[in-house]
Image 1 (cartoon, rainbow, N blue to C red):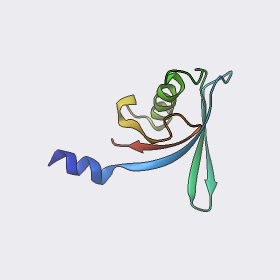
Image 2: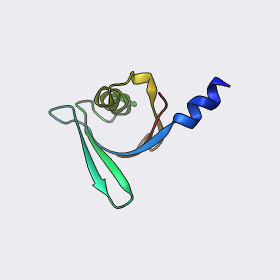
Image 3: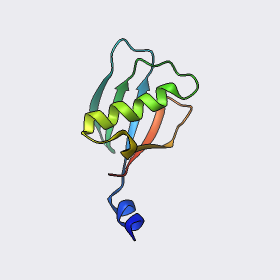
Image 4: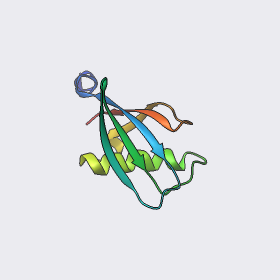
Length: 86
């Protein structure tokens, strides 16, 4: 039953990733369909390093543990859909 409660609380956010940046930052941008997060990470886009950094940086921005953020779609793309489960 605990899993059902987590699924009910889960939400998704759209993210555009900028790897190899000089800084790590998150900027929320309002759009007609909701909001999109622009995420700059210093990690390169190889072997999932940038993707792991995106989850970590977004979690820090939202005040959550990194394990609360997971990639739903776009593992190898700059455009990602993240699920927030905490």
